[in-house]
Length: 67
Image (cartoon, rainbow, N blue to C red; front, top):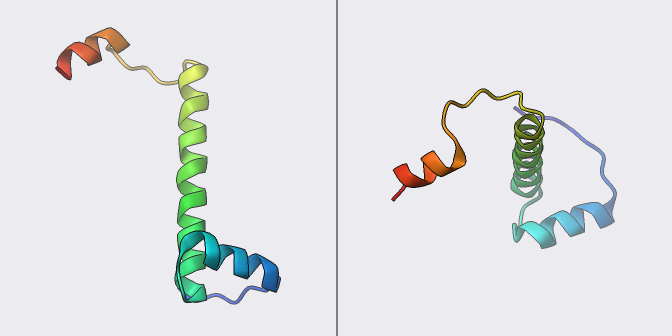
């Protein structure tokens, strides 16, 4: 999907620098993807801490299966 966004030049420079990309579109796409991954991980962690996930095995049982 194509979209048009207005971003400050300093922000785009940072995005290009941090991602290592040379073109703006792939750099912005990479940053958005990474942001979504981090938000999902944060939400998953919150759900784990609040006991919203019903997982039948304990941490110890999972470690035993992993060996």
